[in-house]
Image (cartoon, rainbow, N blue to C red; front, top):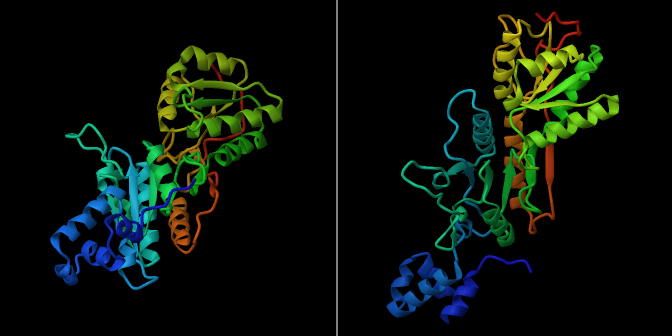
Length: 352
């Protein structure tokens, strides 16, 4: 059965007082001076026992709101350096919130701290501190699924952005369509005549909801439709012997998931005396600065993080207008378009 957040009426019933008494005590109004101390304490004890947190919006005129959107980051540190992928999410959220006439509240206690070994939970002392905001945008990789489930059961309005999966059934999510990036890269390679195409991931898959899993599935589907055998490897297995062997077997292009792959791949490419894209075409599933040589730009399908952030904010504000939460809502945003010039027509490379 769906649980709901405790109400003022629940506190009044437990404390055996009127709703008016609960209101003046918890809102610390001047009239609270008329309430005996024993009664006041009984109200406070009942609120603590039930985990009741006054909704800030309810303190305004009926139907009014604080015009505050929360940002909950499940990550050790805020990504503040230029070039960090998550920074684009933060910028997009800030701009979108301001454009819609809201202010942004950052719940920094979710972040790591060198002096702490554990993250501060949302429900500290049983109270949902996110109620300071009308609704909250959540993102980050170190998600606490139990907390998100509790938020969902409580009926608190929030949207999860940036993940490859729906972390809790029924939670609204706006995410990149990672498969679309793979499709765009492989389509460009096929159009130019490539048929032996490899896939290099940054790591071995250890979780079905890893973004790399979506990318790998799209690659395998494309190879199946092409009738070609897949060529898969992760960064730890990339070496001179592997790449030389694959090129001798006819591989002319690779799909690289991220910058870690590019660093490992280019080290081996240089060791073999090869060049990109003359000897090996490369498509990257992240937008990277620069290219393999002066004047070249990596062919890539950028992840539209700022657009995803904007849609997430729009979605969370929309939820404020709804009496009931939707059963499920997953919106995937297409990656791309493909840009860059490291995918060219294949030729037979000259190995030393």
